[in-house]
Amino acid sequence: MNIDRLLEVMKGTPLESWVPVLEGQIKQGLSEESFGKLPEWQKAIDKLPIIQVSNIDLNKGAITVESSKSLSATEHDALKETLKQLMPWRKGPYDLHGVTINTEWRSDYKWERLKSLIKPLAGKTILDVGCGNGYHSWRMKGMGADLVIGIDPSALFVMQFQAVKHFIGDENVFVLPLGIESVPDNLQAFDTVFSMGVLYHRRSAIDHLYQLRSCLKPGGELVLETLVIKGDENQVLVPEDRYAQMRNVWFIPSSAAMLVWLKRCGFKNIKLVDESYTTLDEQRATEWMQYHSLENYLDAEDQSKTIEGYPAPLRAIFTAEAP
Ligand SMILES: C[S@@+](CC[C@H](N)C(=O)[O-])C[C@H]1O[C@@H](n2cnc3c(N)ncnc32)[C@H](O)[C@@H]1O
Image (cartoon, rainbow, N blue to C red; front, side):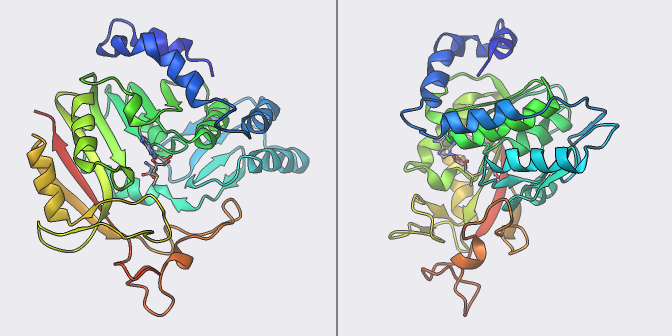
């Protein structure tokens, strides 16, 4: 992964203190020992055709790249086949030269829920923690962000991002193979930090909030999206084992409890801006993600419960300012 441009952009900014360790972190994050399929994924990316682009739209539900001349049926099928080598595609959708990647998640629904409720992103430096393949990172760029750094420890998602970036080109949008724990403490470098779908995967939820705070400039905005339960400020679900078949789910607070946690961590101007149940239209198996999905994780008799008997997935979005 070539990050020369990113290193260049970071120089002379508050991100500069990250530069000396970043290359080593990326090398480790994309190591073949951890991800045996990396050479296969890289081969798929190397096979992607170079196509003259006439239009890029980062503000549509499906992130779209078009060329003035459509692909022939053979070229279309070959591109589809190559992109399928990077399955499962979970976050999207994308429309790349007529190949529609109908992902497991309609990630555009989440973006629609939050985009008018956050501070403007134009000209801003953004961190997207747990960005998956970078779908929302592109949407942030679409809202005018100057620089978007997404981080995700899944090498497959980083490679999917590389495939999309191959067509979109070299904008100031990056997805790095890192977890939040790799971001240096007290960076205070970002105008907005997104943490969406990550908090419940952290064994220490409060430490996660402190880490997010330390990435933000004073007065910068946190956009936090996470699973919640209905209940008062003293209610938090800690699943005994799996939650909706996910193994690594630790804390699912009520929205009221989450507001208290954010306050305890020093955030100001804290708002709960949305609460929505995940629908079977938003998360489902598709041609591009053929494993089980939400439908299989809900109780077949009573869809208000997961198959483990917990409340069905309810997700909330909070905004807050760093002190
Ligand atoms: C549920 S997905 C959310 C993706 C995207 N942010 C969204 O809202 O659609 C959670 C993502 O967090 C990533 N993740 C897991 N542990 C992480 C960590 N320690 N730091 C950053 N990301 C992490 C996972 O690889 C996964 O892609």
